Length: 324
Image (cartoon, rainbow, N blue to C red; front, top):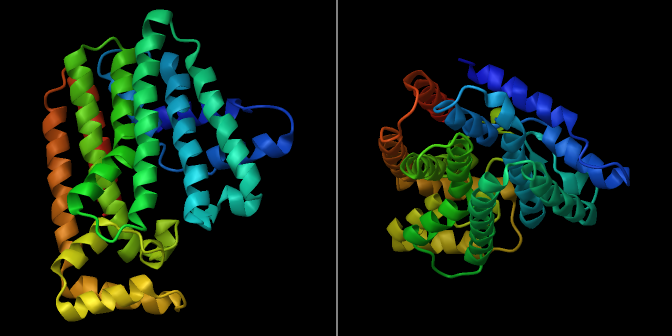
C-alpha cells in the first residue's frame, strides 16, 4: 500500500504535466504559477485515500484528483481578488503579481479545464460524478456569496456562520472523499459517510483557520495574520465575541468595526485583547474538537480496507496537530 508521500508525488507529477493551455501565455502562466506554489494538496490526497479504501490502482484516478485541486485553486484565485489578499501560501497572489482582469480570466479558464479532466471518465461514472461536482461547486459559490454578504449585515448568528463555512469550505472536502469512493465503485452508504466525514472535518479546519488568522505565527501561517480582523470579517471568533461582550466591550468592538481610518496593528491588538478577555480562543477550540469528533464518528461507518482507513485517519489527525 502506498504512503501519503507517494500519493503526493503522483499528484505533483500529474500537475507538472499540465500546461492548461498554450497562448496567450499571460492567460495560462498564472494558472501554472498558482498550481505550482504548493499547498497541502489535501483535497486530491483525500480523493486518492478514499479510493484506496476500496481499490489499489490509485494511479488510474490521479487525473481526477488533480481536477479537484484545480477547482480548489480556481476558487482561491477569485477569492483572493474579492478579499484583496496580498499573499497566498506565502507567495504573492495572482491578481497582485499580474492584475485583476488576468486573474479573473485565468480563473475562468481554469474551471473549464476541470471539466476537461473529467471527460475521460466512462459515461456511467461521468454523469453522477459531474452531478455531485456541480452541486458542490454551486454550494461553494453560495458560501462565498454569503461570506461577502455577512460583511454588510448588522447581525450574523453562529448558526448562519457555520452554514456558510460548510458551503464555502467543507463541502469540497466532502466531495473529494465522496469522489474517491464513487470512482472506486463504493456503495452509496459508504460514499455518504465519506462525504459527511469530509464536511465535518472541513468545518473544523475552517474554524481552525479562523483561529490561526488571529493567533498564528506570521512566519508559519503563509497569510496576513489578523487579516480577518482588519477586514471586519464575521468569523466565529468575532460573532461569538459580539454575543458575549459587555456593553463596554460591545462599544469598543463597534468602534473598530465602524472605523474607516486606523492603524492595522493597533486594531488587531485591540480586538484580540477583547477576544482574550472573553476566552474566545478557548471557545473556538472547543467547537473545533466537536466537529472533528463528529467527522471521525462518520469515518467509523465506512467499510473498505482497514490499513487504508488507518492511513486516512492518521493523515487527518496529523493535519489537525500540524495546524493547531
